[in-house]
Image (cartoon, rainbow, N blue to C red; front, side, top):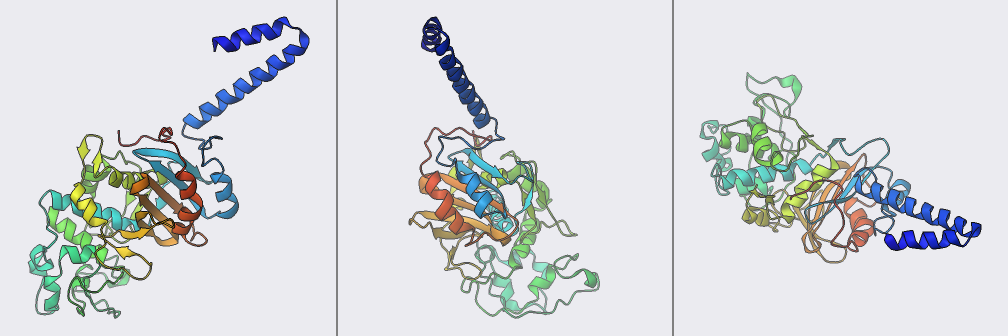
Length: 373
């Protein structure tokens, strides 16, 4: 800075023409200072020297359905984009990403001794099994629910509620309606046949609530969201207080990224071991080949894949292109909130558009939001 002042004084001594240079030089310094302020305030995500500097314009022009995008490197978010009609505090429905967050809660319950992976449904709530329930349902395990290999028949079975259930609300909205899930015929042995049935994660949530013997909403707040400093969220419950396991969660893009960062940090957030590294590794290991609606292997409610450049990755995916995408070997997490399906799919958007630029980021990129310190 002293050199700049001396240089300016020298120019001033040379006459009026140099004053033009001084003004231009001052304008340059002011613009640079302004750009620095914008890059650090968390509201403007564009830095001209960043490999991601042109990404916002690309999203606006080619991917208008994208509401928000966050890119995390290491332990914090280093870039985020928001469509002009929303902001960093706007919650978005994450749909089936809910399943992956539920998986973390199950892992915490296992770590704390409330559940076992090989624990059967008949052990969790033995009083619910009578002569009307397929006896093979008794042997379905927590692991089977996590891997969506419960084995229930693919047929559409009529919801036949008991006298205490309000029929008009439908099976997914009723008090005690989850018991209908147990009354379906079992076609396959547990752990054999993958089926993404849009029911099993709700049943898993009931298993969680029953095992922990406390409010699942409070459990989620105290054990997961609290340590991660996630406060701005909504997670809908049924009439009995069971969290909606299939698609009930709403999060901001930054908080979606925090879920991925937790995996990069091996289950730790700061000084707190939120969930064991052993469970996280197991949950993102291939347990079966998966199947529709996606072409990817399946872990414990997380999908397992590779990027377009053959890097190992895993992800949580929801309807209309909601996504948490983790690339451990590059220490990167991506989260997307979208109004409608992204052209080509959200994974292709990350692989083709965002990941190549993110891989050029320096290790000294500044955080735009607090992370796992």
